[in-house]
Amino acid sequence: MRVLLDTNIIISALLFRSSTPSTVVEVVLQEHRLVRTEWVIAELREVVGRKRPDLVPALERFLSSIDYELVSPGDTAVAISDPDDQPILDAATASAVDVIVTGDKHFLTLNIETPLILTARAFVEAYVRST
Image (cartoon, rainbow, N blue to C red; front, side, top):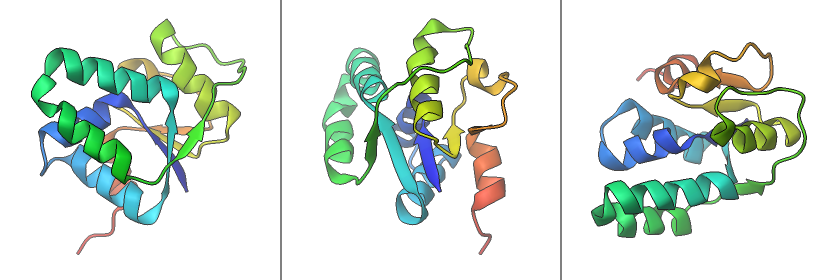
């Protein structure tokens, strides 16, 4: 399954190693195909650099160590209320991503069938096997 992780999920995973977002990142990297956009990568660097510069080295290690598919935005007929989120939605729909995992309310209130938009908790409930 091809999964796009929104910026807030990756930042939460970096901040809180035993969190639900951290579990999502681990599972996606081990069992699915991580999909990234230049937009999210740039946003990650900007937000972490501004809010938590101490985490910049950890972010750069993470970005350089993972395997991911880089996709570009395309045109989509679906509009999202926050224009900053439009490139992410456009890339996800144009590249036929299966799931977007996010905590962003602008995504979570969209009424679309694909891609499936889930919170970190909903992703874990749906796709993480209990041990």
